[in-house]
Length: 82
Image 1 (tube, rainbow, N blue to C red):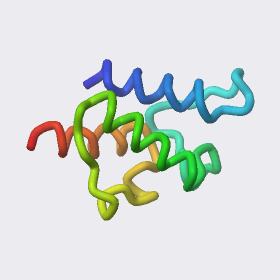
Image 2 (image 1 turned 180 degrees about the horizontal axis):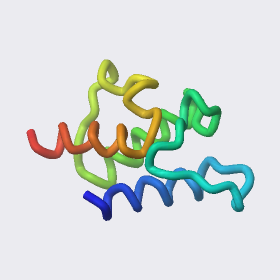
Image 3 (image 1 turned 90 degrees about the vertical axis):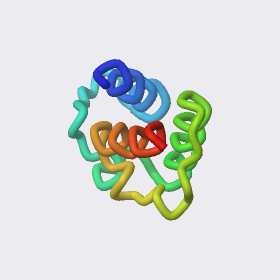
């Protein structure tokens, strides 16, 4: 689980942070904090589906579910275990 958190965190840092020196954690608000917007959320969803060979239904891909690394990992784990 820690490895998945680190992978998701690094992806967010690489793809969405405008300031590479900005520090974010597993609990940093991504959507409500303005780091990830709705367009970016779609590309993040696609990354997760490809990386973990899962399918996340659109109704489960809510801004709340993508608002922190911990919430994203929780979401991915729901579909990994199906």
